[in-house]
Length: 228
Image (tube, rainbow, N blue to C red; front, side, top):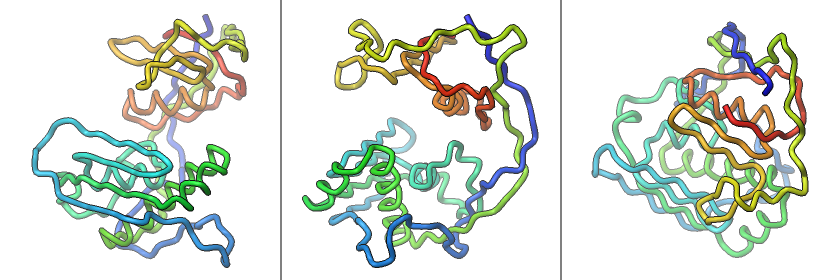
């Protein structure tokens, strides 16, 4: 089995989203193109207290239950850690909300016609617009120094084999729909199992586990099956 090492480093990284600043993010669409937006949005405060949190993102709707503002911002801007957000009011950590945002048929068709990555970015922009409208959120980017882990190959070298692109993993990790497929990862009780996962995806998931930004510096571009 290959050895992957996490090393502590300090890194200047373009992070830190401060609320109530001047918006300074690109929409990624032509100036004359009408941006996609949610057709109907319902926002209600959830007063059930700490408990189950649910987020579901589909082409025809974006649904969140018992989710705080900081988590919403993290999802909308693709931030890997909530600590990269600053300047929010005190209630952003205590108040939770239920949100139902639905799209019309034209928007659903447009999202389904896009490549997966492009559709995901478009949905994040729709979420950003919703936060600006309903929560009056304004943001600006800052650069700050934060501690990170660097994911690198150990001195013994990399020994994993590339995942078989024809493997459908019939007995592998199953998703919420009960089906197994490439790109799945299971974590818990000190064990991480992955099928056809790239190193950048691993770094993103390790960020959640170690509560510090993990940067993929392995240089590996393939997808692999492994158990840690």
